[in-house]
Image 1: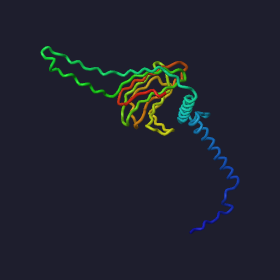
Image 2: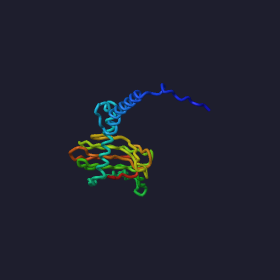
Image 3: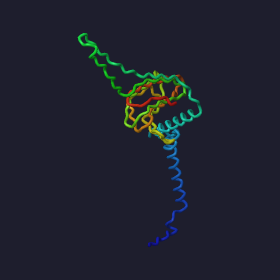
Length: 222
């Protein structure tokens, strides 16, 4: 067992040294608050350093999502026009030769359907949001393309597993004032995956979504 030697009075920091350390720590905290915390959390960037570091953009997205969530709770959802156009699979024609008796003709088998294919359109008034989800199993892929038909919308592509916790979030991509987007959506887990759009312009916007691939169902949820 070791006995530590108590420091002498000369080894202890003086009141002036303690005050100086406190002032330095306070200055550092204020600098971090102004250059890091305020831009990244509240999109407030008085010095401009946050935008140079990419933190202000992060704060703007957080504030936007918070405003959209509050608007969804406060305002009722207006029913918008929804058009679903499932694509029918054509049956191939079989030519009948005069030399072949109709009795020996065999009806063609039904062609295999490579997934599902839909087109949906939603009208968004200024400030209105809407969401469409695909029910998919893990690893399933869907080709998609959506357009704001000459307008611009904010969007958030994300997914929710079955029985997801309240605060669960898994994002695939998001953007602001975007006219269109396309690509391949691959499900990271069993559940529902899709797009949320909000019209932040002062004019009505029509969003048209086209999907084709391996999904179970498609539904507008907001």
